Image 1 (tube, rainbow, N blue to C red):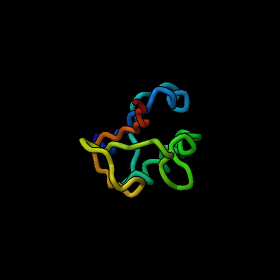
Image 2 (cartoon, helix red, strand yellow):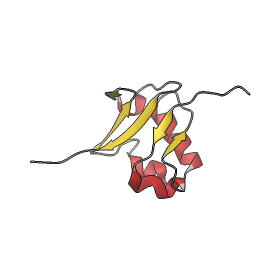
Image 3 (cartoon, one colour):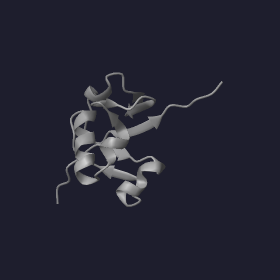
Image 4 (cartoon, one colour):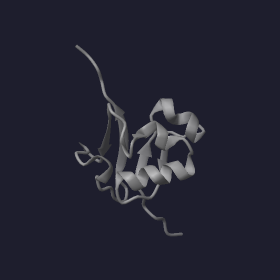
Amino acid sequence: MATINMPRVFIPPPMRPLTAGEEVVEVAGANIAQVIENLEQRFPGMKERLCQDDALRPGLSVAVGDSVATLGMLQRTGPDVEIHFLPAIGGG
């Protein structure tokens, strides 16, 4: 059986109740906006936790592969890439 390789999204612990405890989910999407839309279809409430006014929530970053995305919702993804939503870390 052929497998379709999709981005793997690592779900932050506070959002895991929306995924029934799943820590990693695979969803299609050529960019972060599409990935979030597909997450929302599968796990209602996810978009509200990740977005504000069609952009990533303030204080939230997304890492695609080895680097933090600089294009926000337009950042391209790809098959087998890992996506991590990262809260801002405060300090002083």
